[in-house]
Length: 91
Image (tube, rainbow, N blue to C red; front, side, top):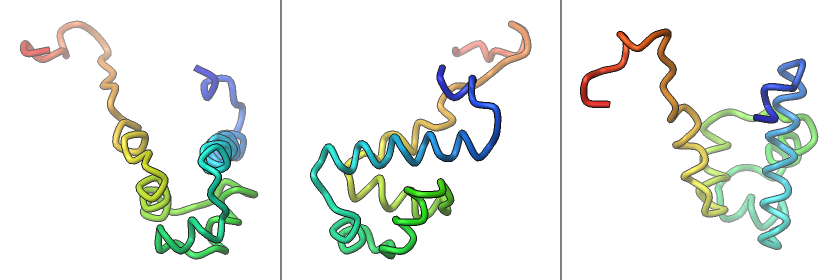
């Protein structure tokens, strides 16, 4: 996974912000339009796309407004086990 190759937290945040920006642009939605539909301020969106900094709540609202809510809910979908004994019987 590409995020595994990033050296710093800042690089990881910027990678997420860049991917988000590509999705927004592919849907032909401006930052101002997204601010209106998401109830997240234009300044927050601009800061996120330039620095990678955003609250989880604001990011969830933005993803919902762009119709990519599933991406947020699947962030921690993978459960990691140290060994086979930790895996529940129903998995």
